[in-house]
Length: 397
Ligand code: ADP
Ligand code: MG
Image (cartoon, rainbow, N blue to C red; front, side, top):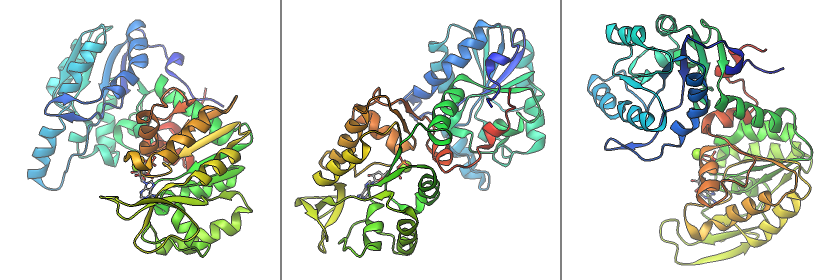
């Protein structure tokens, strides 16, 4: 079973609508990180080389549609024009920016579009109907093209007009970026080489309930670190001082532990501090954490334990940092886990989750993993075992 990809479409001379993820950070008209634009280039270049007329759609940030004042401000802030300038520098083709999402100006630009040229349409979220998958809007956008390619992995978990609506109307396929994501995440989650070890962390249990549940079902071991581990510690009767704790999830943590049959591996020590913002007293604690201290990273014995548990893993999926990695004092657990995964022989290692991906990159492990997902929310939902509507809508070969 595999999905149609852009290679399966006959794109020559056709108007191909591509949903890309150009939701890049922009400050004062300047793009701070063009990774996502670069990520879309393989699909765009393939289409140009194969004589397609390329129509790009993307969202950028959020646009309020309730309050007219906010609506105007959001539109000014989230204008896609700077992206088209950057795109023009990255491709060897004419790029035309269309500052509207419908109407004569757009229709004329599409009519005049030639093979091997690109149109970038204004932010899809300028349209109120976009996030509601409004059938009228989907039909309108679909009427502009002959074919549709979905290449915005970061948006495939959302059933919007530009991700699902158009795909329901036009012959559609996956772009190269989404294909790569689906292959890597699919292999790790749906068809893993075993043992499969999951490492979960991050701030809150409540964000990750569905991920923990799904991975408890499919993984051979589930290592839990980060802030969420303290709720599990409390479930086991430990004291956690002022560490991150979700009292209302203690019962659930108890149930997970009972159900897990020894699969859950928890930290055995912590790096604790007397304050989050101004940590002047930092130490290693095993067992109970006293009042006035909070756990901000896993400790050295936990690192050793996690390394041991990772030995022999043939698949590792990782979501959620082991500590407050943004602060150097509390980044060590995350660094050491990255190192341990990087050293595993013949192991498919996959990172999902926005902060986990940026932790791995910022800490210097960008090339050490088999796959770092580009979609925070989308990769999380994949790991939850949820259906991703933007992918489901694409037909099997
Ligand atoms: P992801 O985006 O990869 O899914 P999360 O958003 O769940 O990850 O969690 C990331 C955040 O968790 C980071 O900002 C990190 O500082 C925080 N975090 C990790 N460990 C702790 C801890 N012990 N206490 C408080 N925050 C923590
Ligand atoms: Mg996050």
